[in-house]
Each structure stands twice: as C-alpha cells, then as structure tokens.
Image 1 (cartoon, helix red, strand yellow):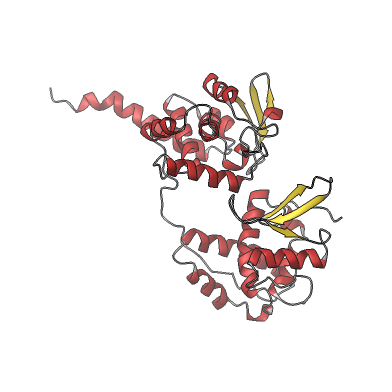
Image 2: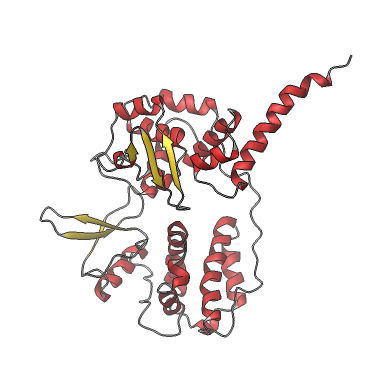
Length: 342
C-alpha cells in the first residue's frame, strides 16, 4: 500500500473493518453520506473512485498524472516538491480544499489558457466571498510561482494580481451572556458542554481541540504541539475544566469524541459545535471563544509573553492586540475621573 500523504486528501477518511482490514471512504461533513472507496490506496482505480466520490459523480477531477501540460498535471508535480511539503499542514489542507473545486472544472485545461485574465475571472466568480477569492489567489500563486521559478511555465499568470484584504473584525467574540446562555442549554455532563469548556479553558484552536486527550496530560498539565504553527503550548488544567472532564463524556484518544467514542476531525467538531450553538440560540463560532479567552486573560493582567505561551503565538503581534486593548481599558478606567470639572 502506498504511504498516506500528510495531510490526506480532503474528505478522505480511514477506518478498520471488523476483519481488521483498512477501509477508505469519502464523507463531506459530520452528517455527510459515507462513500466507500475501492481499490488499493494510491492506485489509478482508487484515485478515480475518490475523484468521483468528491465530485458527487457530476464533474470528476481529471487524473492528474495522465495528461502532461494541464493544470492538474502541474498540480500533481507541485505536490511532490519541497515547496509544497514545507508548507504547514493547515495551509496545505486549505489549498487542497480549494484545488479540489478548481481542478474539477479546469484540471484538464492546458496551461497556455491559464492566463492573468483567467485568474482574474476566478477571483471575480468569488467576489461575493472575499476570503475565498483571496485564498484562491494565494493557492494559484504558490503553484505558479514555483512553476515559473523551475521553468515549467514561461509566464506566471498571478504576477501583479491582488485581492484587497476583506475589512472585517473577524470572528465575533463571545460575551459573558453568550457563555451563560450556552451553559443553561448544555449542562455539565453533556458532550456539548465539554466542547465549550475545552475551547474556553484551553484557548486551543479547533484542530488542536479535536485531538487533545489524556495522552497530552502530565501531572495536570496539557502539553501539545499546535497544528497551525507547530509551537508547543503548556496549559495547566483549571479546576473548572477538570470538573467537566470528570463528568464526561470523554473519549479514550481525545477528550471530545463522537457518540461512539471515536476522535472527531476538526471539520466534524466545527459542525457539531455549530449545531450546539444554534440549539442554544447563539450565532458565534469556536474561534470566537478563543478570542474571548485571550481577551479575558489580557484583562486579568496576562503579559504578551504569557499570552504567547498559552495561545501558541510568536512574534508579539497577536498578543499585543489583546494587551494593548486591555491596557487602554485600564488606563481609561483610572483616568476617567480627570474629566470631572473642578
């Protein structure tokens, strides 16, 4: 069997049959239909079945190794290079997800027609979702910058193309009222409450919250290498979180698990938590809880170095956003009396 790539292709999952054999299947989302993939992993039969399952049988991606000089062929070459493997795992996964859709519609196009105008058209088609437009350009730029540097193509169609960074405050921060509302709907002893408390009292991102478990705990302290940056974070387990863990339900390999006790993908965890939020009447995300945790820590006097140790940041930029806001709040509280007229 061929070695499994890291990260594995989007929506592809691995399981063991009751006979101890490896089984592969495609599943989109926590409630998506499971589609069994036949054939040996890495074989042409397996690749074809995977592409067909991902596309729903409507517009399968062209085999990337069959036709030279096409966009899919270039993508296949790129994924075998150090330029690709040196990217962080979340970045590779994000670009894989984008390219699944790009290759399903344009994978068999010759590289000669992938012009600057074609790139701009792709951006325009995503104008309603500016973050997708920006990620599309970033993915195509990484591909063609490598190809141009290696003389695989004579022109980089992404050169000089820009997408304005969407102006947004990001994920809305949870308020104390939001947290209390969620807690009333999901008391201790429910899987949904376990999700909330793991997010809130560890500050972990969704991908790390999906895998953290008993194996990461030593003497009451969580130590885990974060998925996004590779930074190791050390998080003492607060009594309030320990009480939630004790009440369960927790899995053997990850605290947050499916109803059968199996670990969840970060996508499945995101979907399950979103369902729990909607049931509680809240329209916010897990990342908003991470921001709330950082805000609370900064307001309680955490330094930039302490915030970086908890949240796995480096360089001071992210931590400074929270400490600056906290400092301004404290200064305003101390100085407001100076506005009074004497």
